[in-house]
Amino acid sequence: MLHVKNLSFKYKKQLILENISFSVNAGEHYAIIGESGSGKSTLLKLLYGTYNLNEGEIFWKDNPILGPEHNLIIGPSYMKYVAQEFDLMPFISVAENIGAFLSNFYPEEKQIRINELLDVVELQPYADIKVKELSGGQKQRVAIARAIAKQPEILLLDEPFSHIDNFKKQSLRRSLFKFLKEKNITCIVATHDKDDVLSFSDNMMVLHDAKIMATGTPQELYKNPENKLIASFFDEFNEIENYGIVYAHQLQVVEKSDLKALVVQSYFKGSYWLIEADLNGKKLFFENKSTLKIGSTIYLSIIK
Ligand code: ATP
Ligand code: MG
Picture 1: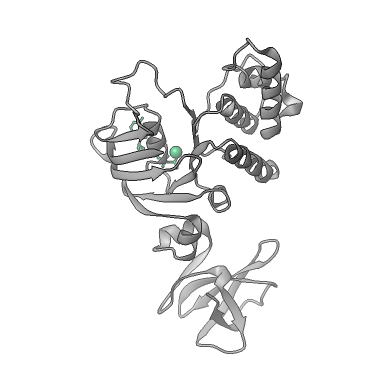
Picture 2: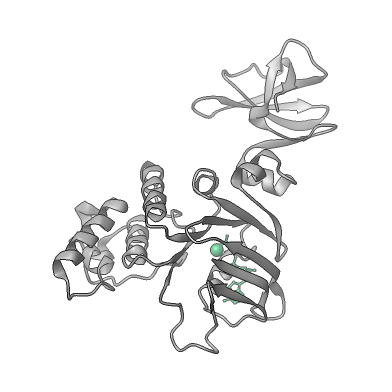
């Protein structure tokens, strides 16, 4: 189990993280979310032992994770970290990069393992291509495969799919998180993307103003967002007087109600239209099966 107790950290004067405490069980998938600059990457780097803490402690099972003050080599052997700016060996092939840290003593097993990893990140056709010839998203996939090659006990992923296109992202996400669960690898992921969290994280935290603003399961935080910041991470939402935070999909057009609004604009979203309306001089968004005429009056009810 990973235990973080009262961690505080500053690069210079300003505290980036203050009094952070949380735990992650072995095999659990844990998400760290927060606005840009909220300290997600810094927290992952601290978990990896990249910097000395100003205060607090980090333990994996009974082992303290210590900073460079105490270690010549950064990063405990049981942990792997895929940075936001991944760092690969450009002049050797994809397969060689993935196998770089695997023993040459068992060439057959090594090849089987590399093939398994190429499947997980869907890079089989690129096995023999030099990494320098890959796109950003392909490189990111090689970095992920290399990090899981030796089956670490913990994997830290920083925006793991940020360079990967929508065509690949969904299936890659499923196959990576499935692989990690099967191998019981604890995974901590810093992300901007709700799709990394909703279906794949057991628990999550929201970082804000150097502190933990909220923790819970994705379902808990999604269903009862304590504030606008949390709601905005998940979905389009409104703050409606007397009702609080209401997601756009929780509003539906009805014959008559006390929520009377004027249609301002319709945006095509594929399976629905996002309608922008005016409710007593305030913007309101809701989802509708069809587009609505600009200027028409509608009544809405809330489905909770
Ligand atoms: P993003 O979502 O944009 O990746 P983040 O939540 O990962 O953001 P961090 O990279 O952890 O944020 O940065 C947190 C704060 O620490 C920012 O204000 C940033 O400017 C600052 N910071 C990050 N790295 C350094 C550094 N090496 N030296 C000084 N300040 C830094
Ligand atoms: Mg970051």
